[in-house]
Length: 465
Picture 1 (cartoon, rainbow, N blue to C red):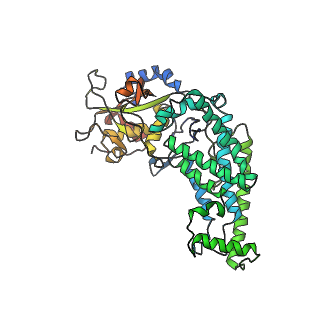
Picture 2: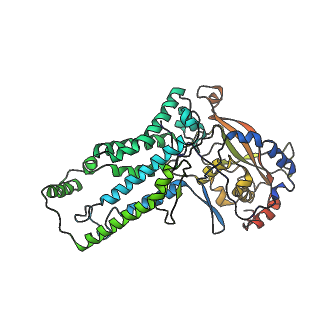
C-alpha cells in the first residue's frame, strides 16, 4: 500500500465568526474548565503542525457548512468535463466534433498537478516522509480507518518503508511520464489508477480517490479502451474504426460552421487554462508551497497537495450525556453517543463507506486536534443534542437516550485511541480499539447555560423534541 493524499495533514487554526468573546462555557463549570487546561499538554502530543487548514469554514443561511479539498477538485474536473463532448448532438460518436486534444491535455495537466503537488508537499514537510516512517502511523491515525487498515497497521517496518518509497515514486516520478510519449503516458494512467485503487482499499477517503481516477482516464487512447466495447456491426468500436480508417486515407469530414465555433472555443479554453496555471506552477516550485488553494475567483485551476505533516497518535472526542441533576456528582451515569463511522465503541468494527462521506465524523476527527474554542460548531452540536433534535440524531449511529427524554447535560471527553493487536488479549475480547482518557475536551453544558452562547452567535435555540 502506498501513502494517501490525506495521510500527512497540515492543520491550522479554525477561523470563528465574529470577534473574540468571553466563553460562556466557563460560567458555572469552572472545575471542568480547569481540568481541561490541566490536560492540554497531553492533548498536544498529537503533534499537529500549524499551517494551511484544508477544511474551509463558511457560514450559509445561519448554519455552518464545511468544504473539503476534493470538492474543489470535483469542481475543476466537472468544468473540464463540459468541453469533452459537443453540446448540440446526442450521438454516441459525434463524427464531426471529436474530443479536442486541448481538453484531453487539460485532464492530463490536472492529474499532473494533483500528484506532483502531493509529492512535493511531503518532501517539504514532515521528516517522517524522508525517514520513510510515515506509514508506521497512517493506518491508525487516518480520518476514518476501515478493517483493512486495522491489519495493515501491523505490517513490518520494512514494508511500511517500501510503501513510502512507492508513494514518492508514484507522486514525484510517474507524473512526468505524461510528457515522454504515448506508451509512457499509458503506463502513467495504469499506475495512477492502481495507486488510487490501493488507497480506496486501505481507507475511507470519501470519493477523493474515485475522483482522482477520472483525469487518469485521459492517459488512454481509443486502442487502449477498445476492449470495453463490443465488436458488433454498427457499434461504438466499429464506428470509431471506420472513422480512423478514413482519416488514415486522408479523408477528413467536411468542416461545419459549428465545428469551427467549437475549435475557437477549445483554443480559448486552452489559453484560459494556460493563463490560470501560471501562479499554480510558481506555487509548485516554491519552497513555501500552498495546498488546495485557488489563485483565481473562478476556482477552476487549483493547486493541490497531500499535506506535509502527519499525526503520530490518534485522539478522539467522545460525546457523553447524563440525566443526572448534578454533572459533577461522582455517581452520575454518563452515556456515550456513537457516530456512524468514527471510532468510539471499542468493540465496533471499523466501517467501510467509501465513496460515501460522513462529514460529521470527519469534523470530529479534525476537532480532536484542537480545542472546542476553535470548533464552536461542537457546542452547537451539544446544544442540539440537549433538545433531542431529530435532524442531528439522524447523523448518529446510537442515541443512548432514545425513548427516555433529552439528557440534562452534555460533555466532551478526550481520549487517546490505538488499534488492538489482532492476536492480543483485547482482540480476543472483541475489541478493535483500546483507549486511554486524556481529560475533558469541553465541560458539561445544559440548555440554560447555552442560551447566552447561542444568542451571541445568532444561533436558533430549539425546544426539546
